[in-house]
Image (cartoon, rainbow, N blue to C red; front, side, top):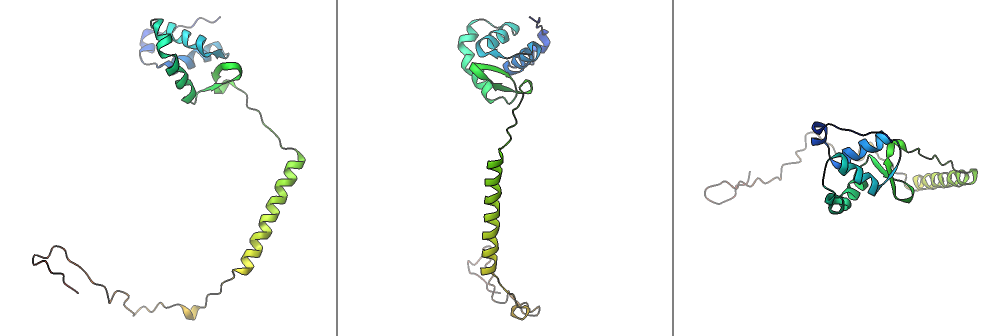
Length: 151
């Protein structure tokens, strides 16, 4: 078993999660949550009563901290230590996916034909001399008399 030791200065700046990551990194193997938390408490020189009082908090920490992952039978490890499985789809599944894509492409083509829109340049009403704001009414709330002025 590897001897784990941290200086008191290092421990002052470390959280439960940091110490747990250190333990798993140094030992290089997965551990049950109880054993891991007991090791964290021992390294941090905390009273044994902290085990019972904070084991639920420690579980929540491991569950939410992205550095850790739960592996089979309640063991915890660092994610970087775990090998990821690559699942390759069988030929039958790939054929099904290709058929779905082809069907969707045909559907889009049919929809495009039905919704063909032609814009005629003569229909555009963009006369630069026409004032689009001629009927605009400006209401001034700061008028002392309380009446609105129309411009």
